Image 1 (cartoon, rainbow over the protein chains, first blue to last red):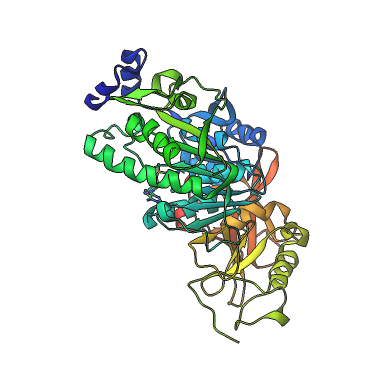
Image 2: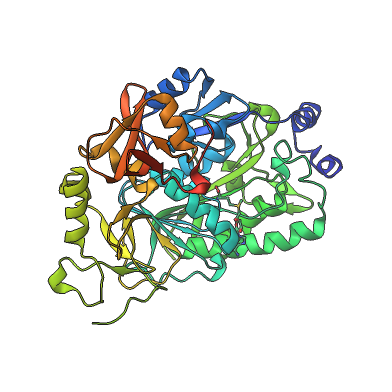
Length: 303
Length: 168
Ligand SMILES: C[S@@+](CC[C@H](N)C(=O)[O-])C[C@H]1O[C@@H](n2cnc3c(N)ncnc32)[C@H](O)[C@@H]1O
């Protein structure tokens, strides 16, 4: 927990935050509406004697009382997919519509890409990209299991992504669920902080900046880009968005979030950020008993 | 006629008459197969395209793409052609099997469990066709497809791929 000490000045009720980080996380699944309705899936869970609770902010996110969420009938049928509660937030904020062209720039293993497809009623095009071929096989497995027929899977570096292979030259929306230092996953992976160091943060933030800039460039004017990470480090969050604001045509916009959260920071470590960054959201583990997350919603503007 | 290039996705020709690649199935043949064998109405596929990548591997896709296409995947694999008996995939059957009316074998809970675990079982009572069947069971008041099985000589063999098998 040592590395998290640097956040003491920015997190309200820091002791509650640390205590939450020590607690393991329960099992949550997302109901995959490509394959069945929420009602029917809940009925199937109840028939199997599995107790559940729907999240207040999203009826498709369900907490399960079981030690083996992977060996249920709903999981076998692809009616449910194991996905952490906060990890289901970015696709909802991106709000893709049926028929649109959507880019998931860092998509493996595919929890969010398949959720995007479900939100679009599996109609339209979700380009699910990842630069790691090994993780792409997990993405493909999940896509087929969940029946997502609107996914196109590519294996490329998102920073230099080319749309040449598609019959369109820009996306309506893009999600950048960036590689990060993963501090917010400490409840799921107790060793998440073992190799933590500031050098890693600064090198990964360079990659994040490159991917977010490319996402803004590849999205049409008036389109939406959501940037998310599962980490607390401002160098990987507000600073990445700030860098993109400084170099690309876009602005930070407000969004509704049914979960408790804190606003984005206006300064960190001597660096000040645009006031608009307060529209970003920091979700801390003690606020909703989840993992940690950061989200910012951008609108692409005219050059 | 050219040969199939296993490295890229090629869209299936609409009909056999438009075929340019040796041995490639046409869209019409694929849709006819799903209708003849399983009674799946052709309209089910109106908004989908079919593609081949890898010899005989057919993919079903709802999004936009131009042909040929050299990427990792589009949509899902749905059917294996270029063999005497065409074989649907378990993932396809789980996604589109609810539209089937023929060659659907309904299993009791324990039989469904064995099927999901990848086990073969004797089911002498089946008096329908032999060959590839859609196995299904009742889930929350409706019939839900489990996957593809091969029925021969009184035995139903589960074709659920290893990675998809579960002990439930
Ligand atoms: C946080 S994970 C994505 C999780 C995924 N969105 C999901 O919901 O299942 C970040 C991903 O970014 C990928 N990645 C890292 N650098 C990348 C790059 N330069 N271009 C594309 N993907 C990259 C990693 O391989 C990793 O799979």
